[in-house]
Length: 408
Ligand SMILES: Nc1nc2c(ncn2[C@@H]2O[C@H](COP(=O)(O)OP(=O)(O)OP(=O)(O)O)[C@@H](O)[C@H]2O)c(=O)[nH]1
Ligand SMILES: [Mg+2]
Image (cartoon, rainbow, N blue to C red; front, side, top):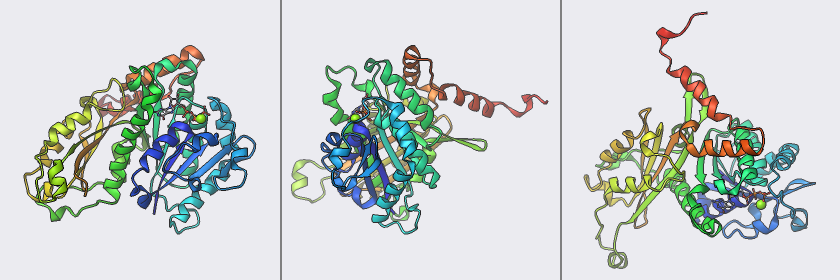
C-alpha cells in the first residue's frame, strides 16, 4: 500500500529525489520522476531509471527503462506550459496506466491500482513541464479516487512575468483537482546572489519536512496508551484535513506552508557510549524556531486558519512523563489556529534527534505572495489568480449569521 511521490519537471524531480535520500521512504512510498529532458533525470541521485517517466513531444509518456529513452525524451518544454498541458491531456490514459503499474509493482492488489492511499505531486509552478503536466496528472489521480496533495514551488518575483503567468495559469487549473496545496516560495531565496546554488539546500529542507510527516505517521506509529506523556497519533488523513477547508457541502484545498526545526538529543560522547545522557529539549522553542522558517514569505503563524504538527522524538522523551511537555506544545499550536483546529501527533524515532514539523494552512487571500504573483501575471497578460476571489465569496457565505440571511 505505497504512497505515490510524483515529481514533475526539474524542480519537482529534485525535491522528490531529496526525499528519497532516506531509504526508509522506499518502504512506504513509490517515487515517480517525470520529465521531458533526460539530462534532468540523470542528475537525480536516489531515484533510478526504473522510477523515471519521460515526456516526449510526439510519444507522450514513456517508461524510463525502454530502449532509446534518451532519444525520445530530449527537448523539454522550455517554459511552454500550454504545450505541456495539451500534450499531457492527449496522453492522459498512458500516464494513468504507468502510475497503476508502478504502484502495483509495490504491492497494490486491485486492478485499478487504487492501492495508493495518498499521492503527492511536486513541481515548480514557473516552468513548462511541471506546471503544464501536473494538473492533468492530479486530475487522473483523483479520478481513480486517490487523494492528492500538491507541493508547489512559487517562482520568485524577479523571475519575471512569464514565470508568474505560468504559475497563475497552472494554479487556476490545479486547485480543481487536488485536496491540498503546500506552498514552497522561492522568494525566500531572493536575497541571495544566486538562488540556483541554494535550490538544493532548500529542496532538502522541504524534503526533510515531508519525510518527517510521511515516515513519522506511517512507520513510527505508536500506541498512545503505552506512554505516560500526552502522545496522540496522526496519519496522512490528518494531513489532508489540516490542509483543506470544508464549507458546507464543498471542500476546497487550503494553502499551507511548512516549517521544521530540529535539535540533537545527545552530545557526541553519549552518542559513542550509548548510555543515557539525553539533553533536555525545550519543545516550545523548537516550535517557535519552526515558525521562523516557514516556506512562504510574509505569513504569520498566528494568522493560520488551521494547523498540524508532528513531533518525532526518541522514546525516552515521552516514556518518562514530563520530560517533554507535549500538552503545552499542543496549546501553543491551538493558539495559532483561527478555526480552533490543530492536528497534533507524536512519533518515535531511533535517531538522536528531536524534530518539530508544522503545516500552517491559510486562505489564498491571506498570502501576500499569491497576490503579488497574480499582479505580475496580470501585467504580462490578461489573467488573474481565481482563488483570490473565489474563496472570499465562499467564506463570506459561511460566516453569514442565519438571522440576516435575506429571504427571496
Ligand atoms: N526550490 C526550487 N525551485 C526550483 C528548482 N528548480 C527550478 N525551480 C523553480 O521552478 C520553476 C520551474 O522550473 P523547472 O522545474 O526547471 O521547470 P520544468 O518543469 O522542468 O519545465 P521546463 O520549462 O519544461 O524545463 C523555476 O522558475 C524556479 O522558480 C529547484 O531545484 N528548487
Ligand atoms: Mg525542465
